[in-house]
Image 1 (cartoon, rainbow, N blue to C red):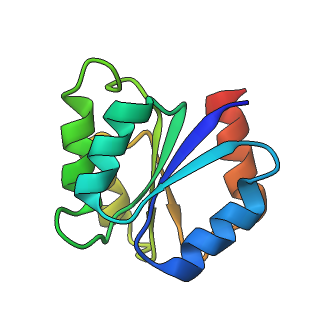
Image 2: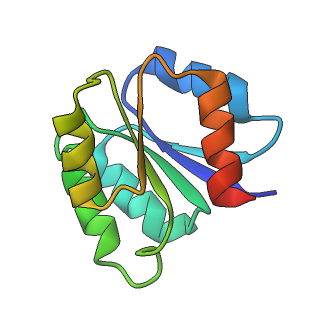
Image 3: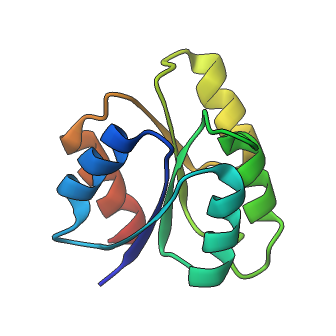
Amino acid sequence: MKTILIVEDTEINVDLLTQLLEDDYNLIVARDGEEGVAMAIQYLPDLILMDINLPGIDGYEATRRIRTNDDVKSTPIIGLSAHAMSAQEQKAKEAGCNDYLTKPINDEVLFNKLTEYLG
């Protein structure tokens, strides 16, 4: 079973993602950017769902830091944000995100992206 690291500080979003994904994936959760970077390096997940607006270092910086580590630099990262502006998506991709989804997350779109990146 593939492992997904969820980096998200809002409990309701963690609960929603957990309910959607727990039957098909092993899930690990980080509550801020620093913890997300550490857990990515420690657990080597198959994919990372990265909230952009996090306490401490934001999702952009956490993604940049993950991309500097040889063990996880090629791990797919999907940025998650409530901001639907194309500038935010571009900034996320420049930081190293492979993809970008807006909240509230559309279940079908999320599963299509997971299939695209994880098979």
